[in-house]
Image (cartoon, rainbow, N blue to C red; front, side, top):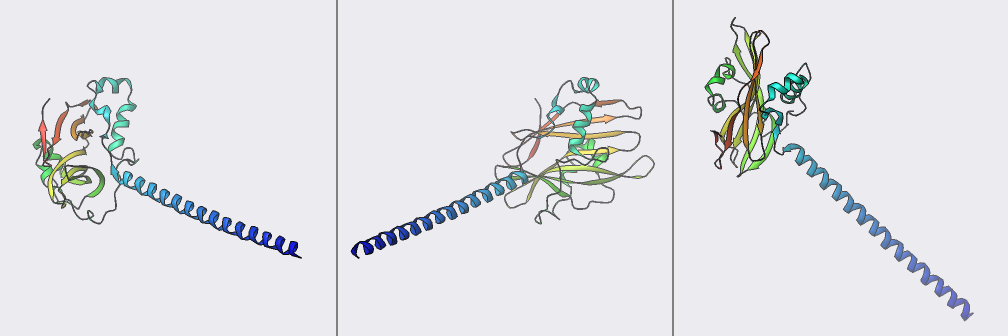
Length: 244
């Protein structure tokens, strides 16, 4: 009888031990699953932030080639690759500049300062009928507590026959840490009136230096690129022209 009792006690101890081990194992699995879930959510949040906050450089680096016209003469597809980066070409929208839904900037920016930076652009940028609010399409990395944003919209002007032309454009806008406008610069537009075409293109490098170059076509289809113009962003958030 004592042997039977002893055996039953041993069995009971084994059952209790196994039950406790199973509980701890399940608890460990639950904790592991929770930790994995937190890690996945964290990774997704970082991915979302990276998607919204574009890291420099931005633009087509081929734009900086000194012999760009010669290279395009050898490979005409290079010109299309450059132009379609910035805007809709042949009905295909650029995948690099899409409207960012941000209520803080949905009715925020209309051009003003950026129209007066370069007098030779004013004929293409000054809008006859005023402006609608521009759409936010890029948030760039913050520099010296300044926000760098790119807004996209349209200017309207009259051609030689008095017809209204709508010109797609993009402006680089710099704000302070209270979202007050510090400075702005037009960095892209695409103007066509049936006789003359002019496209302003940009490249912004890792050090916040801005390169601007124009591509032009005349009525006979003759095309050429301008020299590169350079700007930089000061510590105060102002955009100034520089020379090499």
